[in-house]
Amino acid sequence: MSRVSDVRAAVRAKILTLGLPITAVYERFDGEEQTVDYPCCVLSTQGLAETERVVTSGGGTAIGYGVRVMFLDRPGRLTGDAAQAAHEAWREAVDDAFRNKALAGVPEVLACRVERLPPGDPVRRAIQRFASGLVVRAVYWVA
Image 1 (tube, one colour):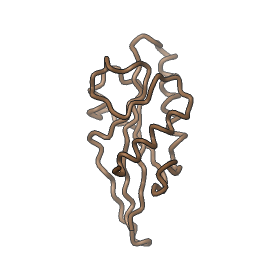
Image 2 (cartoon, helix red, strand yellow; image 1 turned 90 degrees about the horizontal axis):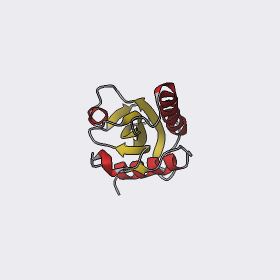
Image 3 (cartoon, one colour; image 1 turned 180 degrees about the horizontal axis):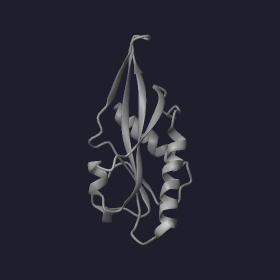
Image 4 (cartoon, helix red, strand yellow; image 1 turned 90 degrees about the vertical axis):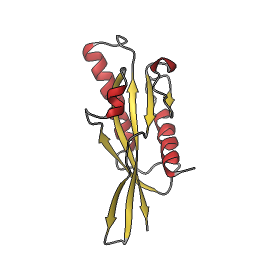
């Protein structure tokens, strides 16, 4: 498998252990929102570029592979403050599970960074039932 596939699978496995009140974590999403059960988590690498940072002191490169983690929910399932609180709690649970931590199942990953999804993110904007999300970026060391 590729590094991106390894990272996506490991992110999915970790999210499944968090006990979030979601129906499923989908590694692939065809954009057809009626094909998933809600609330759910959808993973995507579409449009996410690798990051690269040369480290002069160690003579290597830190390469980051990102996975967009998006929570989708049915309109009206929760409303107002309850919806916002639930969706923020899901995002915060994922943030806490990955930020500055190794990635279980992928020993080559030094640590994960967590990034907010920008409001203009094209995948986020294309999904009508988007509720919350972030990017988990697994950082590999390449000598």
